[in-house]
Image (cartoon, rainbow, N blue to C red; front, side):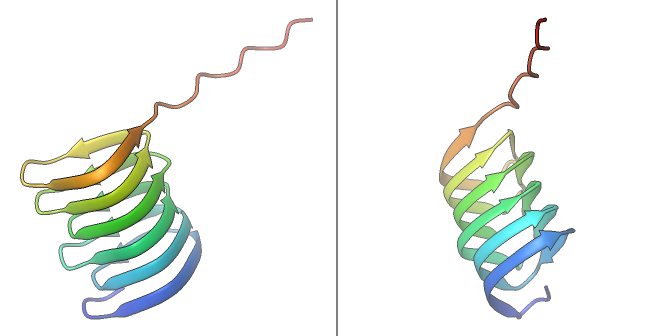
Length: 110
């Protein structure tokens, strides 16, 4: 999604999403989301495999893997992720829950 573009609504499906514009609404992705330096996710309700923030994210997000906030990236709202990585110069003003993967189920006993 290009710089200066604005999209409001729902986006679902597989693949990688690279945001340089502004996106608001609902994301339900089976892939990675990268918010570039000029990108903004606002009033977002989202789910993705991983989330890298170089721009700004504000809303509620569930990340199956790593939430990575790069230098200059800003995250507000609430997020749940398996792993959290922050860089110097990043901003985090959110409720964060970091949950490791569930342990593998024990085999059934006969």
